[in-house]
Length: 66
View 1 (cartoon, rainbow, N blue to C red):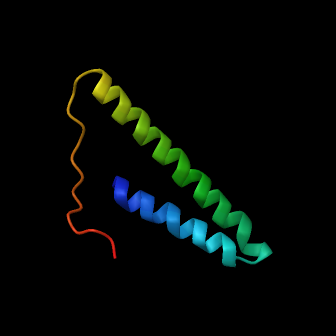
View 2: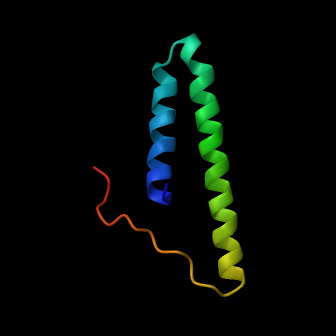
C-alpha cells in the first residue's frame, strides 16, 4: 500500500470510529493502530533515506483522491 492510500485508509478508519458500535470499535481501533504503525515505519524509512542522501521511492499513484 502506498503512502497516499495509507493516508486515505487512516482517514477512513477515523471516520468509521465516530459511527461504530461498541462491538465494532475494538476491531477498528486495532486496524487504525496497525495503519499508524505502518505510517511511522514509512516516515522512518524516508527520513533515513534523506539522511543518507538516497532518493526516496516515487509514489505510483498519479490521480488525486476524490
